[in-house]
Length: 197
Image (tube, rainbow, N blue to C red):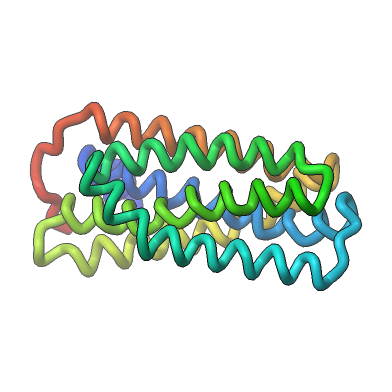
């Protein structure tokens, strides 16, 4: 636990780990809220929900296969991470406004594109921010923060959804925006040294 806390407050890797934690929170809130939102608010059939998940998965796969490396070559990892988190903030807001299956499909494509960029870029940044001997430890710490986010996201999502079914999406937008702020700080702060854990 001491190592986890120390890493989160490290001036070089702390912001990247915070993105990982808060993004896992907003993603797990989204996963929690999606099914009841689709079934109860949009009245979708199980087949429509399955189609939406399939399209979401295919769009994410294609984005990771063809877009990530090209965008990184054009703009660099830090700028693409910042842009993808702004993209995700907008995407979560759009999810809260969806009223039909066709709107859900369109927003899901938008969402899948942005989401597919975040995790690979966070991992790439962490591997550059850590020295060679610490990369395994750093990625393990990152996995721990993601797990923490996945534990508490559904709890927060459940509390929000009890008041209104769209609130987990708004909460996701707020957390994605917090991640974008951290990404902007990473973008505007020079990297000082490789971290050794």
